[in-house]
Image (cartoon, rainbow, N blue to C red; front, side, top):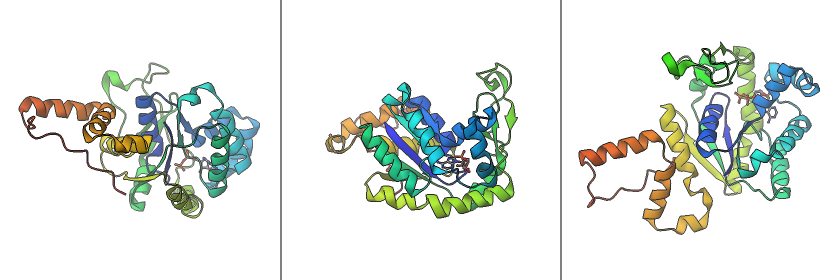
Length: 271
Ligand code: ADP
């Protein structure tokens, strides 16, 4: 599966990409994370990117493209990838298209995560991530777990929560403006290529993951679309998350869905 997650800052691309990557066993490739790592290491790339990032502007295309070309060339990306935060303007989208054509690995789908602007600002202000493992939390909507589950997988100690330096009010306003001006046109670009799926990315985190998984289910193309209903539903159930599975098991035990009333197709993602 080769996909791009599109969405404004705060739309949950990073969080959903992390979840999907774990589930599908393919890497999440976040240009924001790669750039932040370069800044933290003080590499030439990091030094060149730092000012733009702090100002909420886009880092120069040539730097980001070089980084992406290198990352997509790594062996783990051969089985697929989830691009998060890239491409971010039309020039990057065209360059990605050329690169993937060269690699003979075209995209399967592009998913646009839709969130109201007011909600974006609220989410960004609550966002914190672990300085050690990079996991993203939100103090308002998805705080880090407590107890045994709270430890960081990297250090074995509790997560060390930090706020991103560009999550301040002035920079956030600029990032949202840049998104509208430079990134939003990618929605039409990918729609014209028949790759676009749109999901409502508001509400419960697990529910958004389910919508994302459902939106990706038909991505294998026409052959899959032509399969009988039952086969498609079975394939969907295979990727549906534990909670869904648990719930269907429960309802089956409770007899709420008998064999005479077969499962209907999962509701479709919002277009
Ligand atoms: P968000 O989506 O919340 O704005 P990211 O972590 O994706 O956060 O990006 C943080 C910053 O890194 C951006 O504001 C920008 O300066 C830089 N950046 C990330 N990806 C790209 C890209 N594809 N092209 C140019 N700059 C980028």
